[in-house]
Image (cartoon, rainbow, N blue to C red; front, side):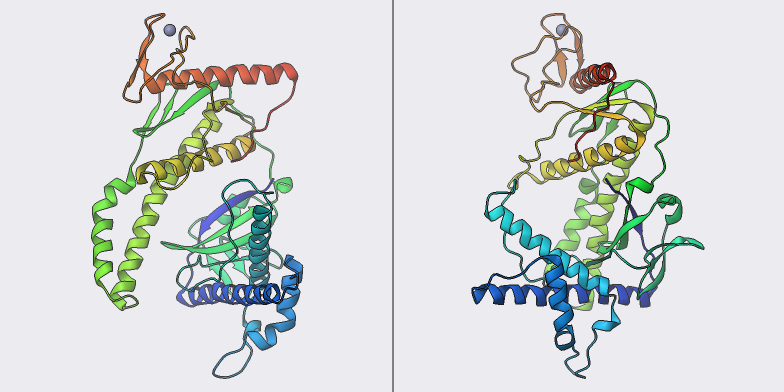
Length: 399
Ligand SMILES: [Zn+2]
């Protein structure tokens, strides 16, 4: 299973224009391919929509499609061929998912037919899978992008990749700038370090982001709540400004970087906590999440929290694998909050407002979240004992 490294890029203005143009070329190819598939379907022909068929079609037709409207000269050769392969892959995936979903072979929400990518409404991205992309031998703070050049990064990429083979590098623009995500080949990555001992239970919540059975309480940073006033003011300003104007662009940029900042604060906390957990404990017990239940039409705060929990568990899952720690995910119906951590009796009812767990059987009085965390720790302990008894290690599923 591959692991990924995400780095922020520091392109020069010229490189930035080139990045945007590459993403634009990918979008153009995607739209051409989609139009071709649609035309085939309208003519009642069964279109070939594998990535290879789409790429072949693009290569046959690019000379007449990717042409400058004013000069009549073709421009496709100005960009890496990888960007067109990326477009073909995106469309092939989209069509495959749609087709599977339509036939009922795909779980989750229904996938709609791929749509044309609008210039201002789609993710600005492209990727490399073949060629000489990735880390640069004599410059640890840079990545190489064919046809664009060597771009400086804000961190030591070579150190993070640690000699592993890079399978794929995707590049995308986020609210506050450009990022590259390098997918590493697990086979070529270094061996995991000797892991820590003991076990811990982690209870995730709204007020406290996490309560650990070792007594650590990590408050929720609520970055959005802090930035809410500024964000609201910018949104109001934006709504009064002429879309596309200079001031509009500037304010939109400000708003985007503010959103990006709130996300970074959350992600930073999740990275630190997950790293701490896998470095300190051998077994980590955590609740299951109702991912299917994370549907729209709910309170914003709840929605943000759901995403944060999901992200956190993804991080914890891949870091546990890398560090050889056991991640024990409680069964969805395991009553971690309702069980007494001292005598094991289970309450039938526990309202969300009861912040203290009071046991009628043994008289235990304990913070609700701490009680749940201790139960999750017990679960992690017993699960790892049974693993040792069977002489095998259980791998947690991602997601
Ligand atoms: Zn009790």
